Length: 138
Ligand SMILES: [Zn+2]
Image (cartoon, rainbow, N blue to C red; front, side):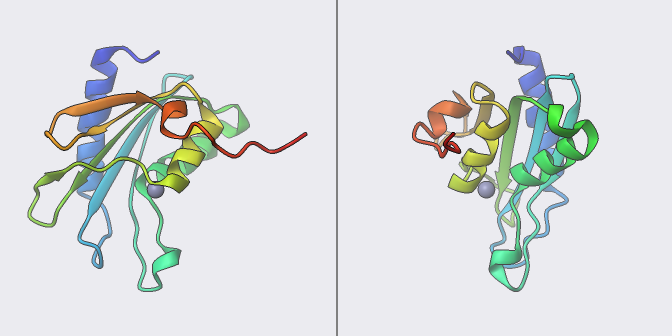
């Protein structure tokens, strides 16, 4: 379980990561920062493409970096997601469906934090974001 101060750290790093987002089409800049069970932090930002499906989300960019560093042993403890409009306004954005599936792959009880519609930081378990997630049978 991530301690509150670690979540604050992740929120700040996600905010920084969003500044590096490549989002010329949606103008929605998203940053993610995650904490691994090995006590390492990894960040990612969304990277769009003129061919829209080629683009990728901040959360999965951070996960890819974590797996690159830690390999199959990577386990997700917590992740913060921060999203901003082109004018810098913070927006309430939670992980998309694909990212929810990616999150539970590495931690079904990870803390996921993002801004709600009131501008406050919500915090939920990754499993609660996707209760009927896909699980490979067998
Ligand atoms: Zn996503």
